[in-house]
Length: 410
Length: 148
Ligand SMILES: Cc1ncc(COP(=O)(O)O)c(C=O)c1O
Image 1 (cartoon, rainbow over the protein chains, first blue to last red):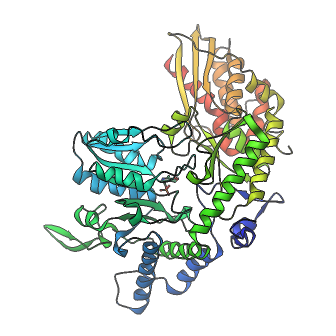
Image 2: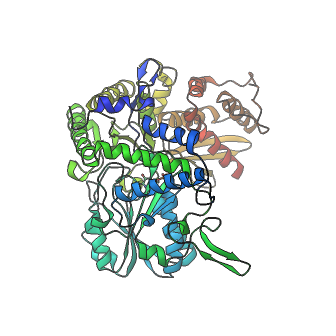
Image 3: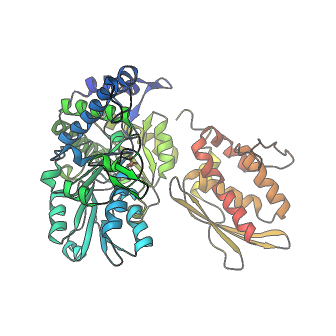
């Protein structure tokens, strides 16, 4: 028994009731994308059945209601991450678009040839490539924070690396190793050096209490689909002054105050960064996901995952000893329940294929973190990631499935 | 484990454990690198063509049991073969992997082309994500041949 009543939670996820080949699913790929509880599914279908209409554009009652619902979702997000103002919450397509928005709109206005952007070796491609595009286009320079042997950021040379940097972009939690980084400390180090702190919070927000003000961050990005919400919507939070001062990202409807033959003026926040018809139904779904998470309590979710991570570390190490290698820290205080594992030299593709025989769903691949794969000295890893609907039994199922892999690959 | 015998046949595991024709060939042998963007695997194929015959072939890189065994069996099957036979074998193998022809139509198997050990990879078709693993070395071979 852990902090959360996982059996009761699992019952709220219709997909997790599904059996494949007569066996239950052991879904261990939530770092990729999470499953959806009934309340989220219902919120979206009810909205489409009863309240769907355009927002911000029409005077009729139905449209006013839909606008309220959409803006209501923004307020839920604001409270969820403790942002100061609702209009600091920008709805995007996903975390990738949110990070691109920062690099494109803020970056193109503020970064010039020779300017330094500091990233880390454990970034997802979404927090690498948008900056590398500015290397090609602007001649900015990217520096990298290296890692320690146990997959944490090696901060020994951080002050030197930050010298003259304008941006420090880093993940709050690694999607590959589960490492949780000291976000508050990194934000203040960035500010001391005069750099902005851009936090990729895509893996952090679904699993922890998030407080952007306590962090002292400048921008954070995350995706709805990893936190029990639908695909198609993500969030950029930015400090109001920064969002006010920077130019818009995409141009079109909704983001303008006026358009004349000789030019345009931007709308106020948040519309300034929400060009075109937004993902209205998805915002409703994200709002419902946040209600669902708040009911459980994010502190409880985190406690549960500490328990699962501890159990997984103990079980896998006890059962497999030196046959298994788990990347990332073994201290559960600085890691989530996401594990990249190497097992008896079996290729991740083969491993995930064998695990699939008992419906144990893990991801095999580079996890959109090829620079990190090179650091780890592998092409790919098999990654098992646990969430609020996983329990210790799922860990045991993983371990049993690993046994069958040994049988085949000897 | 029920169900996987079709995929992981003994002969596949054998080629995976002890891959044949591993290594490199110096220029003027042709060399191509194939990538499986899904998993980051890379494969190197080196071919030396002399008088219209595959005089030598070597395989490098790393990958899963399917891509490695496919490459190993391929190297055995093509070594010493005239080019037209090799191209026919590539077609036959890709057909077995249910890869369509240039016009997008299913390929009729040319039964005069013998697959030998490669037949063991037949089971891969049931696992569509693995087809890319099985065909990686074959596409890389075509790239290398195009250079020579
Ligand atoms: C750490 C991290 N950043 C960014 C992303 C990108 O998220 P999305 O694909 O939803 O834009 C992911 C998702 O895999 C991630 O894990």
